[in-house]
Length: 344
Image 1 (cartoon, rainbow, N blue to C red):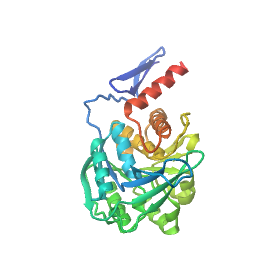
Image 2 (cartoon, rainbow, N blue to C red; image 1 turned 30 degrees about the vertical axis):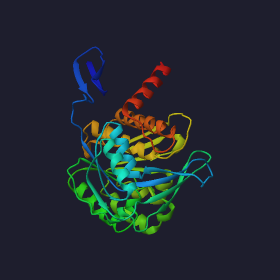
Image 3 (spheres, rainbow, N blue to C red; image 1 turned 90 degrees about the vertical axis):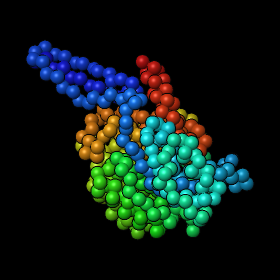
């Protein structure tokens, strides 16, 4: 039997076919055919959640000089996805103060649609960042009376909707975002969640709130600590779970697929924005393949490996820089091409 097995691998301008043949009858099997060009329309990514200002120390263990940096998990995800080639819109409630104006301006500079951003006179949320000796970041948040807590979110027609992080912990905005998440799921959108659980809201009430949302979630990104917090049993209802393991890489569970992808070895400056870059990369690669929610649990291990390796490379570039500075798509592809040359 002649079996011609065609694997088509998505690349920037064309599909590469790999053909394997054996003598006998001819039977052509095509696993995945994805032809990506710059003129293709990709799925829309709608990011919901806070934008804030990180106060980052200029030097370790120093509070004398704090540099303001635009951030917030959802804000970082939106920029990461846009830089990596996604069509991205952002929904939040941002202050009309100077920080809020800067947040909106940055999003627009990055090509993110801000037409669903609400504005208010309340101040911008602040986060004071501490950097450990290993480059790991921890945060103290100042959220009382801030603009993003009073959001009144509305549904869009985006095929992919992302939710996280502090915005899902502070009322009344958290409940409103939770209801919007359910609406996106009901209309058939892929719903992605990164709870990014912080110590000041790691309690039973927040755990119950998140567990209620999980049944509506398609893609869930967690740290190993967050897996323990939510409980492995609760995660079984989510079709796709990606666990970040710091310097050890990423672990995926999607349907019957189990996959570990190592991190890319780089000199770490700090880890600010690493997880957000991973999520932005995951969403962009799903969007660029025009995958429906039901496709994700049937995607081959080969395809998932490609997606996760891209995300790991993107995160490696981010941690090699100071602050949340996700890479552009060309930078990630160049890193991967260099790695392939070294392996050859």
